Amino acid sequence: MKYVIIGGDAAGMSAAMQIVHNDPQSEITVLEKGTIYSYGQCGLPYVVGGLIESTNDVIARTVESFRSKYGIDARTLHEATAVDSSSRTVSGTNHETGQPFTVSYDRLLIATGASPVLPTWKGAASQMVHVLKTIPDTNRLIADLEQEHVKEVVIIGAGYIGLETAENIHRLGKRIRIIQRGSHIASMFDADLSERLHQEAERHGVLLTLNEEVEAIGKGRITTNQNSYPADLIVASVGVRPNTAFLKKTGMNMLQNGAILVNDRLETSIPGIYAAGDCASHFHLVKQKPDYIPLGTTANKQGRIAGLNMAGKSRSFKGVTGTSVMKFFNLIAASTGLTEQQAREENISFKTSTIQAKDKAGYYPDAAPLHVKILYAPESRRLLGGQAIGENGAEKRIDVLAAALFNQMTVDELEDLDLSYSPPVNGVWDPIQQAARRAT
Image 1 (cartoon, rainbow, N blue to C red):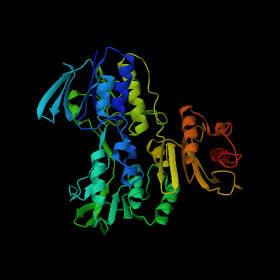
Image 2 (tube, rainbow, N blue to C red):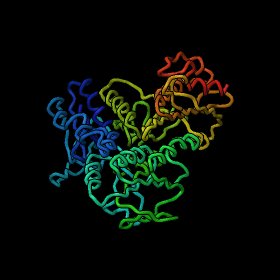
Image 3 (cartoon, helix red, strand yellow):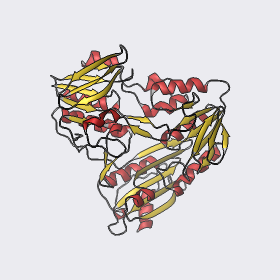
Image 4 (tube, rainbow, N blue to C red):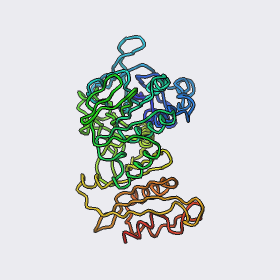
């Protein structure tokens, strides 16, 4: 059986390893347009800030290890530019030689990931504008941050990567401004919860410029629709786009943004072709429809399941609830399921319960505030989502809520959970149960 995988990172190599383990007769070819395989993109902001010493530290396995230890034909600088499903071939360009190539497959996995969006601002192509997605992006950003004249850094966009990058560049002693076209940073949270992140940014001297859209970038300045600000270096973090443009002629079913539509076995609409990771759709368990939530955890899970199915071991991908967590200075912020805005977009009726509790027993010496919010359906009282922000313990509460969403629990059933308690780590009533009681 000839397997071809396009993309050598999380989803692609998770699939490759499952094929290696489950099909001893497999012939696996991986086509990677870059030179680096299997690295942790989520760790790159912390390399920029110096918490992780080198980009080498986020590489899980080298290209050579895949070749020598597992017998995978792991190619680099091989960019796939076309797929012919009738002849079952992938063609493209070997950028090392400049020559075209064609490989045949019995089963094909598309794991091409996504690329940062760079809007058509005037001056967007300037050398002072950076994105942060790959190891070369990271090394270039670090080199430019080390230049003596770089003192004012502007982050455009306030999602996970934007906020994590802001914190880590702030660690280097730079003055940080975040420009966000919306009314609050971290749009994966509702405004009332996101206000905690606003306060944290202000405590650390990070300037927030909200409700403004970037229009132009010039030498030492960035201009919005309302003002102009100093900028020695800019990091654009306004979202990603699936790397699927080269597949348009295949007629493969896709979401509107170009993400490949897959079923629970990670099969596309074309027989013999699978897709996984940031280039694929992700079934949302609360919305009950395909969605696009590109996260490293999902890419690894989808890659694993795609590899098992390609190798003949039936396994289904159950779906996602959009669970995520980030650190922003001294706060941990986590969420799962729907926010108020998302519920409105889906025309889902909801009620909310929001509390400020303590992350441990209130009488314990260093007990700190923990803000928790849950969304639930008014009639069925089924849990719809949750958010938590605090210095400690937000991730624990959201992981519990993610499990509750997976099992379609009601907000009332949260009270019945047997959650751990000890004064140094929790109160007698866990904060999510306090929120559930208030909903009751």
